[in-house]
Image 1 (cartoon, rainbow, N blue to C red):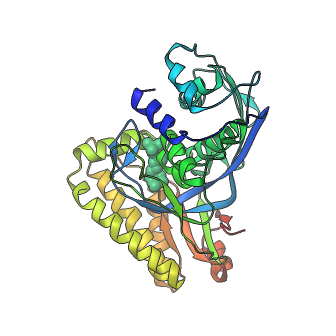
Image 2 (image 1 turned 60 degrees about the vertical axis):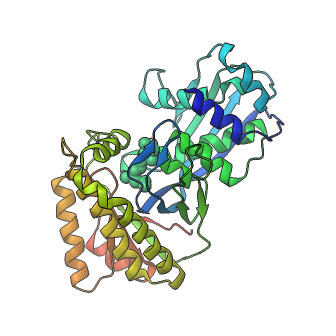
Image 3 (image 1 turned 120 degrees about the vertical axis):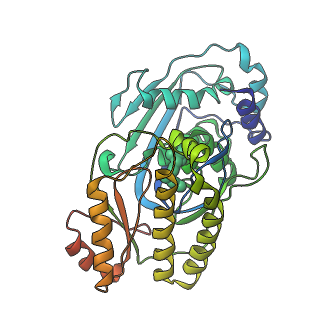
Length: 349
Ligand code: DP6
């Protein structure tokens, strides 16, 4: 926890009142970026180099419950006393199982909660996180996880923060979490201010009930390098990265127009090109970042093949080996036949 983060949290909560409850709870959907976030301009406030655009995954995500012992006033003025409050341990449960404090999951949750702990008199929290995303499906649970955690904290403290502020706070936990405070299509504006106040996500005003996402779980192997280190390495060492921010800008424009016109082909092509361009920047980093496995390459070819035969299906891939397919309801049966292992998601329910 740095001073700059503490100050940021204090500013975001500046005029929030407090009406604490015994338990706070919230649900946040997972999301998949169609135009990816890859690269940070400032680490402490988790500010991205480029804007990104995603689709939230409806009922698939994280439900979190949080409580603190005793009743406390959670107002921003108590942050001033931040430095002298002792740090208390948290009980962090994941899918009903208490996580040892040294596990990376518990550490990430606790160090995020450290940002808010002074507002709760330095107390420890009990956090119960339930993911209904199959953990091995290669769907980022940190996005829905930090979004649900911030929203549950907001519910616990009774701050009544708007989505913009919730998005800015979730961003501190994980960049992609900034987008998971909304349903549907979401754009996270990178912003320019060093203070991070213009870097938050907004809902794209569109409902596309026929939009489908399918997950192809190809490998449950641990990623060798996490997104955070991977993107830092790419920014520092990849010569191709220079062209990435402009590509991201173009793709967001194309995808937004495609959403407006319900032009699925334009959306799919831009999303697929964006994901593969991101992987090109990763591969040209040094040491190289190769998240794709042989099965991923095989499936990429399979997608090109069925598309050449006339089936409108496109792919996207995050920093891992698994593919996500994009298609419309009318092609659901044909896509399921071509990819029998597919897990079907209806983002609009
Ligand atoms: C490839 O949001 O996990 O999924 O901000 O360091 O926590 P941190 O990174 P994270 O990165 C996500 C990268 C991505 C693309 C995306 O979701 O936009």
